[in-house]
Length: 115
Length: 112
Image 1 (cartoon, helix red, strand yellow):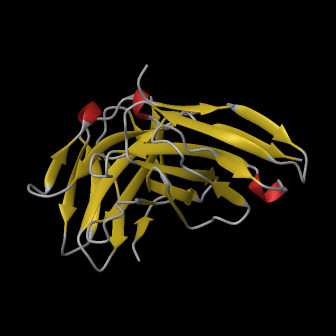
Image 2 (cartoon, each protein chain N blue to C red):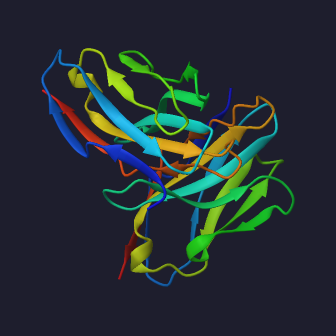
C-alpha cells in the first residue's frame, strides 16, 4: 500500500522569500507523483506531476518539484512567493503497477504568505 | 464549460435522511472518484470507478453507495446520514490517472 507524508502542516513565509514544501512517500512499486493546490472554498487544481524522465519537473505559477527516488521524496519549491500563493497544498502518489492509478493524498500543507 | 460539475454546493441533512450528491464530467474521462475532506485529514477516498459499470471501494466506504451507469455521471448516495458524515465532498475525474485529476468545486454537507 502507498502512503504520503507531508512533513509540515503549516509553513509561514514572507512575500518574495523562497519556500519548500516537503513530501515523502512510501510505496514498494513504481509511482506517479503529483502536487495539487487548493485555494479557499475551491476544489483542487493540479500544479505539476512526475511520471518518468527528468527528476526536476516544472509546473504552473512558477512552482517546481524534484523527485528523489533514493529518499522517496517529492518536495515542492518556489524561489519567490507571492501573497496569492497562500493556499493549501497537497502531495499525492499513484501506484503505477497496480493499474488503477488512484492517488493517495497527504494531509496537506497550509502555505501562509505574509506581506 | 468543460470540467467536473457537482451539485448541490451546500446541503443540510437531518440524521437518518438519505440523499444523492451528483457529479458529472464532460471530458470523456474513464476514471472518477469521490473524496471527503476533513480538517487535518487531507482527502480520503470513498469510492472510485475505472469505467462505466465498474466501481470499487476506497478507504472510507461505509455509509456510502455509488453506481456508474454512464461515463459522464458518478452519483454518491448517503444511505442514512450521520453527523460523522459532515464534511466537504469532492468528485474528481481523470483519463487513466496519468494526467492527474480534475476536481469539482465540492459539496459542503452538514448533518445535524
